[in-house]
Length: 211
Length: 256
Figure (cartoon, each protein chain N blue to C red):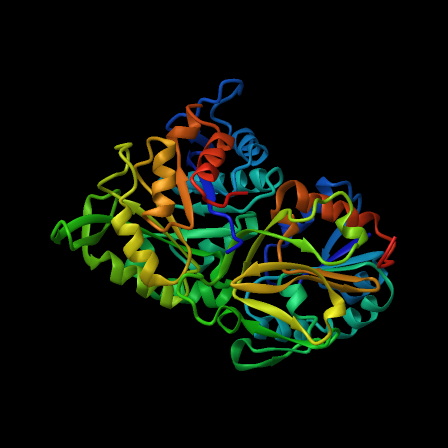
């Protein structure tokens, strides 16, 4: 069973429908720690602001169970579900996040130098260069475009976790991962065929970082 | 720069059906939104916009089911506009499977709706639709006014100023329709789009007036649009999405 974590934010059904479309037979959108604990794999989606995200995770008492499942089973963070894995975010005047990965979430102005030609949010289809081979990229051509929509980006302390980069004014981490945890800034569930392929790869993934 | 310019087909929905004619050559039921949306999704459209043109409450309930059905089949972003009047309406559409909602008249009557909805759901899902008409100014220094009710009702608001204000309030994107050009097939009002695009700082979708593929190119290059919205040139099979992208790519525009 795949658990999609429901903490009251984001278009969770899109993720559920996309997983079902690529062959997942059992998907549960849930805020129940026991159900999440019992899942074979976990998807952590999300949109919106990080303060709301973190306070919802605390309110729903999901922080502990997230920490547990990130230790030992295939785990996919999407968009806010990637940013929340970092140490902290500069959004909302600074918010402590889950701290699974060391690093900071910063506003795009930091990267683009406030260039008025670069609109914020970064919205649309951008190229993903695969900086490392990863089972989740199987069958996806290097440089394939995925759908992004975000105003903040992840700046990891250790470049070794960067799995894919995109360019918007400058290069930024568009996919990160280590061991059984993988996370994307883009939305695979909204990225048509290549996004569906990534999700299909996820439901077949054994949680090992390399083949 | 990296990010591709988007092509967005727009479908008018009434009582769960696509209206105003969509005539793909080999589609059996030209009015079925699921079938048409699926076709555009597979054909390479970058997003889809549904415009609800119904008036009655019952028909709006039907729209929720339509959005649910389409969202199960379509794996690109889906925007729903028309008749969004409250934070509850926004929530209902997002829960049904819309990725973004477009707010138009309600934003004018109650500007706090945009900031409230953006604070609650994030700017990324709040599009503000600006329907603008040339009004005053000169040929070299034009002015535009915001209109409602399909261009019939003036508001007294300067369109550029209004667009900037909506972006500041939390709109993540602006859908700018020229009421002078809508339906004319003579091209976008690129001066309007360029002025807003330079000043608002959020992505702009150009709408109203597309008659051929060069208009899409002009919309991006002259109008500095981040996305171009069109209906009839795609619905009637005059051009495919692939043709439009090839044409734009030939003009040096990044497309998916």
